[in-house]
Amino acid sequence: MTSNKGEKYRIFVSYPETDAPTEGWPVLYVLDGNAVFASFAEARRIQEASEIGNSIIVGIGYPTNKPYDAQRLYDFTAGPTDSLAYAALANMRSGGQDQFLEFLTGQLRAEIAKRYKINLNRQALFGHSLGGLFAVHVLFTQPGAFHAIIAASPSLFWHEQEMLKQEQDFTTRLKAWEIPKVSRLMVVAGELEETRLELWAPEAFIKRMEPLSAYGLLTQSEIYASEGHMTVPNRSITQALRFAFSWP
Image (tube, rainbow, N blue to C red):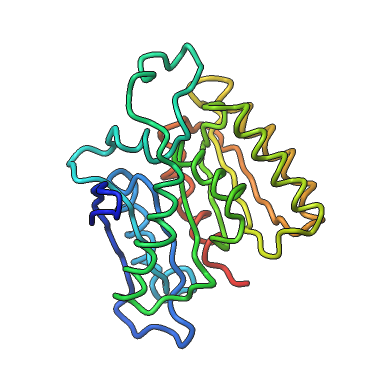
C-alpha cells in the first residue's frame, strides 16, 4: 500500500472466518508488522472462539523480507536523537511521525473499513521500542484516536525533552477535563533491557501516568522477569490482546 505521501508499506491482516458481529470487529494495529505480526495473528487465530480471538489484527510493515526496515526511524520519530549512543543514526532519515500518524488513522483505517466490517470505537495500537515511542506520541497528541494503546519497551529517551513537553501539555489538558475521550494505556518492558535507561524511562513514565486515572486515563504496566528488549513483544502478546480486546 502506498500512502498519499508516497511511502510504501506492506499490510498484513488476520481476521476471523465467522461473520462479523453487528457492531463490527475490534481491530489491533501492530507496528513493525514484518517482525511481530505473525505471532499476534497466530495467537488470535487459536483463540478465535474467545472474545479476544473474534477480532482483526492489522500489521503495518515494509516491502522487505527483513524483520525491520530503516523506514521505521522516519515513521516513528520526530527527528534525530541527541544521545551519543545513537550517533550512528544521526544522518538517517527521521522526523515523519505525524505524517505516518495521518496515514495510520486516515488512509489505512479507511481502507480496512472498506474491506472488513469493523468497530470504529474499538481500535487499538501496539508499538515496540521506537514503535512504543510513537504509540506514546499518539496518546499525547491524539488521545482519542485509539481506545487502547500498548507501548512495549518504549524508547522514551529518544527525544526526551520534546516528549516531556508533550506529556506536560497532555497532563494539563486531561486534568482540566479538556479531553473528552482518552485511550487506556498499557506499558511493558523487560528487566534485561539493553541499557538501564531503557528500563528506568518506562518505569518512571508509568509512575507519572498512574495518578491520571482520576481523570480517566486507565493504565496497566508490567516489567517482565528474564526478558530483554527484543523478547518483550512476544512475551506481551496474550496480555496485549486481552488489554486491547476486553470490553468495555
